[in-house]
Amino acid sequence: MKVYTFQLPKFVSSITRTCINIFKKDKKVKKSD
Image (tube, rainbow, N blue to C red; front, side, top):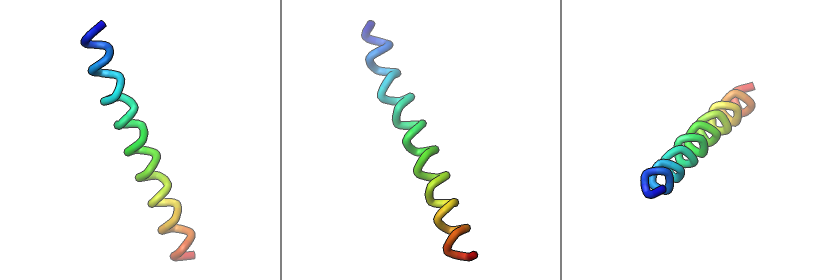
């Protein structure tokens, strides 16, 4: 249970970071266009 509680925030953080990167890339592409 302790390991799960520790890994969950790491997993969510990774997804959030990926989403932010995709959003930034999309924004850059739209701005360039």
